[in-house]
Image (cartoon, rainbow, N blue to C red; front, top):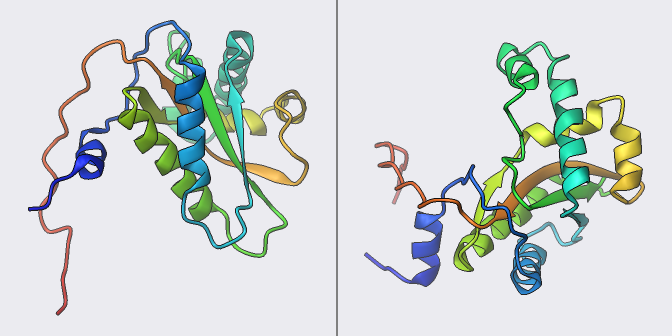
Length: 188
């Protein structure tokens, strides 16, 4: 089997939900963002990355997302929204929101997902923890949503598609579980 550094990083990357308090280095952030910019896309690069490192704004996003979660029909999300101890960003020091231009003629969910995956793999490659976060996107459906878009300087016509948190891992990463069998079919 072929093994190289890229394949090792992909296999060792795990979602991290416990972070140290300090902010990531600027050089690490720039490496992650550059990797996101080089993600495959349908040729238009119709995405925008918003980096949030302000603790007060991160907490505000958490509270708005929890408020929106309490209004959903999904019991699990309502419970998380009502849990005072739950912080949807896991107290990470950095959040990157990936938005896409809604005027683009192509669907952007795949492009934004590819960019997010590059961000996550790059983070692992420089020794940072990361976690793909859906929950925080509910903040944009809360009553504070329009205000948050302005405060975050999200470009007009752009919609949040994905987001991830980044920081220094508080503990060792979990070992990857065995992969399920029969997930691949080869027709030759």
